[in-house]
Image (cartoon, rainbow, N blue to C red; front, top):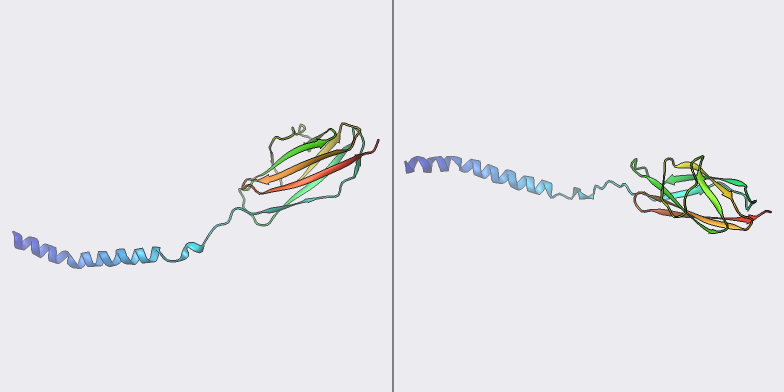
Length: 149
């Protein structure tokens, strides 16, 4: 019986050697330097604003046209807006949506859009708009209006 078992083990020796060679070759191939391939999904962006008036009267609405220009294209990137009013009083809204609340974060459904600022005071006004993306990139826009009353 022992002779049969030894013959069986010797018969499997080429299979063990072949298995060891295959394992070593797979390990060498998988350790090759193909790790340089990276998929980039974090693209900085620029923000363009069309010219706006410098003066605003109490009750007047000013249109602010904004375009987000990507430096790359990753389809799942989301953009957000937040605004802060420093001087004067007014409201900022997206198209005909309800006015934004200062310091709250709002999703932007489009990369090209219009904001509408309505003055509710007779003094100079200033506010900032922060546009950010889902990767933490941010751009700050500052707006100042002189009172024209």
